[in-house]
Amino acid sequence: MKIVVLDGYTLNPGDLNWKGFEELGEFTVYDRTPEEEILNRIGDAEIVITNKTPITAELLTKCPNIKYIGCLSTGYNVVDIDAAKERGIPVTNIPAYGTHAVAQFAIALLLEVCNQVGHHNSAVQSGKWQTSLDFCFWDTPLVELDGKTMGLIGFGRIGQATGRIAKALGMNVIAYNKGYSTTDEEIATYVSLDELYAQSDIISLHCPQLPSTEGIINKESLGKAR
Image (cartoon, rainbow, N blue to C red):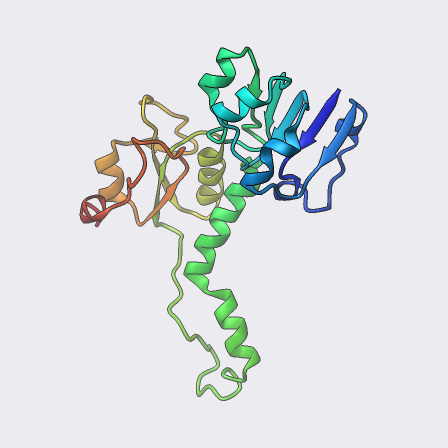
């Protein structure tokens, strides 16, 4: 069985191994695959593993040996799902692989906005604190999150994990999740999208990019914010 990974570096820059794949058959991994090389690199492979390298209907026609496509990602929009279904090719993704890492990073970005630790460190290293007239040296205002309201648009695994961290920081958490109207009150309270815009101090997006969500933060929605 031939197995090819088209863009392995995205998920495995070197801290993991491919042993499980190697045990399954003839295995080839590429760090990155430019568009013009996709067809050649897949060749007669039966298993294709991708992350962001597109697998189109045209490509599936030209690679009739493909029996399985695995996406090393939560999203699978890089694969023409309808074309794969027509050919009986199963396509899988990994919906939970980055749940806590993404939530942690979202909160890290928020804390950087509020505390600007990187800027503060540079300012101290350059001697600004030493020359400051005051002991408490700040170049930028400090934003305290306790008591602030975080609005989560999208309340799946990552949204919930982000909400738990926000709650631990003393924040009030509200959420909008299309198609759902109840939630675990221990994490967040569901509100309408307009209510979320109006009540939130911070808005964090955790929804898939779809035609219905693209541009969801815009002049009109920001005009509803407090």
